[in-house]
Length: 390
Length: 174
Image (cartoon, rainbow over all chains, first blue to last red; front, top):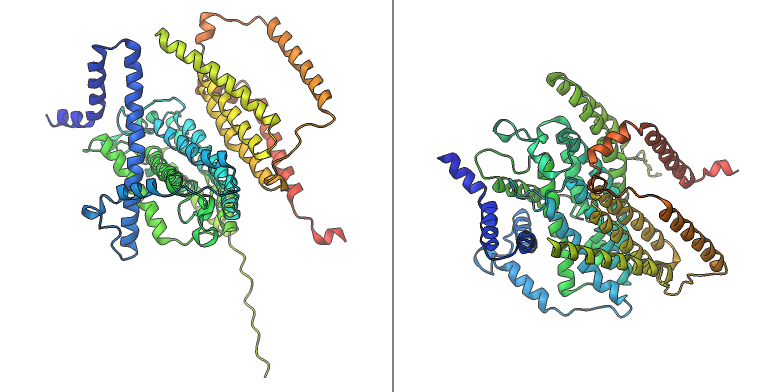
C-alpha cells in the first residue's frame, strides 16, 4: 500500500501529462497530439525557468542577509515572498537607456540571445524519474555544447555598449569561461566512463543501488570530480568568488554596465537559470540525481540542487574575490592536472578490486594533490629588513 | 505525419537560406565584429542541419568546437587588435578576382565529383545511425593509429605555441 502511494506521488507529474495527452487525443489528430506533447514540456520549462530565477534572487538575498547579520527583504508580502514580483514590476517600468554610440542592433540582441542557451539546457536535466524533457543519448555533450555558447552573447553585450568597463568585463568573461570550461568538461569524463553513457538519464540510473545511495560522490574519483565540477560551475556562471567579469568594485558592473530595465533583467535571469541548471547537472552527475530513499524522485532532485545553490550563496557570503592571475593559474595549473589524474584514477578503479582500489586511489590522489600544491606555491620574496642607521 | 514532415522540410530550407545569408554577411560586412557574429550564426545553422540529418553527436561537437571555441577565439583576437571600433574595413583587394577564379574552379570540381559519385541511397542506408559508442570503438580500435598521430600533432602545436609565446630571455640576446 505504502509502495503504491509512493509510486503515485513519484509519478504525479508524469501521470498528469499522460492524462492531458489522453484527453487531447480523443478529439485531435495524431500530429496535433505530438505537438501538444512538445508544447506541454516546453511551456512547463519556459515557466519554470523564470519562476526559479525569481525565487533564487529572493533566496540569495535572504541568505546573504542572514550571513551578514541582517534580515534581508521582509516588507513585501509575508517573509518578503512577493519581493521578486515587485522587482519584476520595477524592471518593466524602468527607462531603457541605450548609449548614443552603441551598436544598436547587437546591443538589443545580446540580452535576448543569452536567455536562449540558458533555457535550452533545461531540456536534458532529469528532474525526476521519467521527467527528462528530451532523453537525448548525447545529453551531457548537448549540455556542455549549449552552455559553451553563453560566452558569445556576453561578448556581444560588452562590445556593443562601447564602454571601456563593459569591454574589460567582456574580455575577462571570455578568458575565464574558456579556461574553466576545460577542467569542467574533463571533470565530467569519470562519470561518463563509469556509467558508459552520455545520456543524463542513464547516468542517474547507473547510480542506483542499495537504498538508491550508490552515488558517484561516495568514491574517491567521484568526490574529486564533484569538487572540480562544482568550482568550475561557480566560475562558469560568474558567481563570487569568480565574479571578476562583473567585479563591482573595479568595473562598475562589468559587461552589463550599459544595460538597464528589462534588458538588464534578462542578463540577470540567464545567470540565475545557469546557476540552477549547473547545480542540477552537478547533482545529476555525482549526487545521484533523483535517486534516493523514501521521498519522491523529484523532491530528491530539487533538494540536492537547492543544497548546492545554497552552498554557492554561502561562497558568495564568505570568500573574497580572486585576483585575475590567480584565477587563471587555479584553472590551468591546479584543476586541469587534477582532472587528468582523476581520469586515470577512474580507469584504475574500474580494473581493481574494492579495497585495493580504495587504497591505491587515496594514495595516488594524496601524492598528486601534494605535488600540485607544492608546484603551485606562490612565490613569496624573502622578507627584507632595513635597520635604521643610528 | 505528413504535416510535421512538411514543416521540418520547410524549416530546413529556411535554415539553409539563413546559413547562406549569414555566410554572405561574413565576407561582405565592413565591421569585423559583425563578421565574426555572422560566422557564429552560420556555424550554428550548420549544426541545425546536422540535427535534421540525425547526426546529433556531430551537431553537438560542431557547436562546442566552432561556435563555442573557435568563434570565441576569433572575437578575442579582434578585441586585442585596433580594429575593435572601426566600422570600415575593406573586404576586398587586388587579389579578389584571382581568389574568385580559384573558388569557381573549386566549386566546379566539387560539383563534378558530387554528380559522379554513386550515392548509395537505400532504405537501410537512410536509417543507418552512427552511435557514440560505435564512434568511440572505431577511434580506439580500427583508427587507433591515426587518432594517436593526431594527438601527437596537437601536442606538438601546443608546445610550439608555448615556445613562440614565451618571453625572450633578456640575457640570451646579449
